[in-house]
Image (cartoon, rainbow, N blue to C red; front, side, top):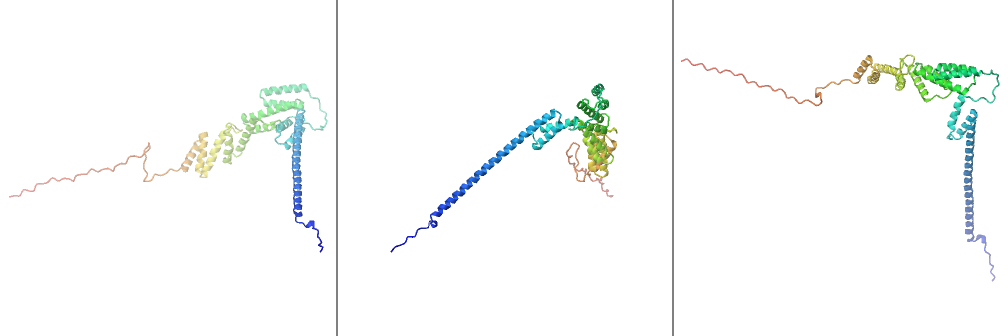
Length: 354
């Protein structure tokens, strides 16, 4: 009997399935490694590009800063300002840019950069001989600290020769206005005039710290005077900021800052007394008396003190104290000397009569 041998189907064999499964896993691992390598390579490329871009920006900023220095040297202040503002917009901490920008702004105020397309005009040729003479007069006035004469002569010079030594003349204007403003405040009791002069001086350059401080105190004084006799509390606040530093600063009234502060303290202390705020009134009136004696303020302060600290009445059980401290020794009750009963002289019995 012939038996027909059936061939085995390799696709159904159990041993082929693990092989195919292993092949698939290997393929996935290979793909993963390829993707990971691509990602790593891409990240490295991004970092490289970012570094290259940062280097390029830094070079560009350095180039702009160098060009701005050249612009300043050539007097092209507006272009230099634009370059520096661009640099600070990209790198706010760029070394030296902020200081150079401040310097350029000051130079623009002193000597403005002409426009790109100036309008041509026919101007008469200045008399340089007259300009030289006026300039020499200004120098003499400045040396003598005659600020009024210096400013008057500068005006004549500017009219006679508008472009004559423009930067130097602007500096002379600044010095004259600055010093005249300070003198008005400290020597002439003209606070408003001094404040105005310093504002004009700022058109030619920034104020120094000392002049700026004087102006601040003068403005504070004027502000405090505006509340005089209407709001003593605010007057105390403003003059209290001036008196410790410029006690003799005064306006046209002749009242110094210290005297204004003293009177404002009395005014505010009196107002508090009228409101029956005794303790607060005592504090302000006491401070006023430390700046100068005032009979009325002293009586009012004493009255406020009595009302703020009323005296206490000693009770019947209070123990008296000696002047030097301690308590006196107890006293014994007085002893009465016993009196003997009166003795009667015995009388002899009558003798009986026989």
